[in-house]
Length: 429
Image (cartoon, rainbow, N blue to C red; front, side, top):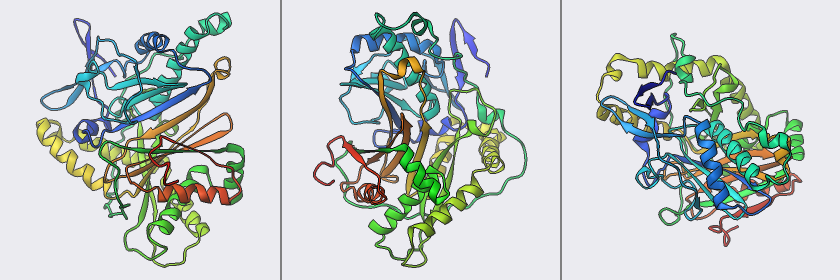
């Protein structure tokens, strides 16, 4: 994507997906997610600040502020300096640019953990992880410069400076595509936690043992976990009874695995897999077979290409392009509310996180969290590092019925599960 310049101030468009987030986001639904790294020693805040200053110039998608135009939002270069803070708020809180030097991300720390909080408008999980790893490498270089080898100290923390192309437009192909009708999904309900409070539960299991279980069932990890979430909802919330509304798991898909892309901005899509419980005696294996079949059908380049074409063609529509931003916002809100009605729970798998060998000995692990809302009160993320898989649940529901059933199932399958929490659910786990 070409930058527009004026006296060294650069601006560029939001990517196709990012156009949604400024419209739907507020203090109760932040559109913020977190990726974190745990080191083996306490974090030095001053060195982390220096590492952040060294890292930011390598990521154009992060060094911006959000501006409002007549027809579209756009990004403009932010010449201010981001400030590292000690963690104080609950994770994934709304990022107010006016109190954050206009930046759309935050770096916080607590004890041995570095947190990167990101407003989804600037990047997705892949871009955020790349930034976090670069920040971590720069921090380790500063904290251990007396003992690191010369090779590591001089090693670039990224292969190339990040690109801000809109990969949706790059991979857009004009062709016919089916129009999908959204079906209302079963919704999780219950007593809510106090406003601005979010419960977090991590479950850590051995990666080799869990993958062996998935292999035995002839499914992928994501397929197994999606089916397990449906199974737990069926048992804990639906009491194993029939229901006309399907339990739908919304699964973000990293499109870089399917299409050409160099961007560090957003480049992801979704698939929805689910079960409509037409009877009262399902088995887990029945659900697993159905879910894995839906994955195989939907997770294809052709299907994802149709989704890209549908979304980009809407943006390219002449009426949409030249409609004032206020009208676009109304349309986006209506479309977004409709889309959330099709989701029961969200499952995001960031995959196996790799780090450079020389830095690995200083890193204990990674984790990720996604912000929640009343319409999507529970979300689950997966990431793995060093033969450990970490499942992280975020929720605003008072009682962790789903989480408890989820980890109990893994334990019943012979897996040892180590649980951690931010303290909200201590009395209920």
